[in-house]
Image 1 (cartoon, chains in turn yellow, cyan):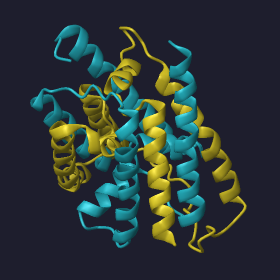
Image 2 (cartoon, one colour):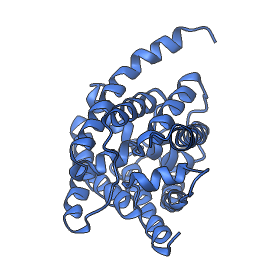
Image 3 (cartoon, one colour):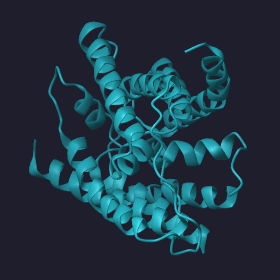
Length: 142
Length: 140
């Protein structure tokens, strides 16, 4: 059952990314291009996504388990550390260069040609390298 | 901006939020694309089949829809840019524990301080990168 729900959520996520235009790197880079011809579409997508998701968190707060029986996530972490900031900086740079974040990179894999696979390969290598960088950051005195 | 842009943006956004809601309330998990993929490829996840099912839906349904929607993705043909962008995206999202779906959609919707801060930082970094790469260096 959990696998079926996961496949359903993944499919709806992908279809939503497609309908919203967020698989189009031009629209994403257009949103980030505040000094050029700014494209506000991404703000509408984010706003639309926050509506059902806020309702879901409101439901989650009144329950201690998900409908599938598992515990729900605990309270959100509050620690703003160097890994979070440096990670967001690096991710933002990559996002700006190509206009793909992980969700759309996967959703467009089926029709993005060899470039889409190259991006996924590079992204996977970056993901595997992250724990090594994290250990170096944690070793440095604050 | 044409009305199609914001209305389809809003509609697609609601679909994305509904997907996150289903994943949270059904499976008790936060729908973060980088976390789901990352945990699968670095071997740290125990629920491998469930993550694979999520990815199958995320890759498979758009691939089928693309047969008649024929979407435009405008992906750059520059392999250097793709490699650099992919590496930075993978490294950054795992180091910072999240991307646009996890920190952005799922984090902001419960006012998570880490999600809000990360989203502001990656958007600023993205805007600065586009400003430099497009308007100063002219490479994108």
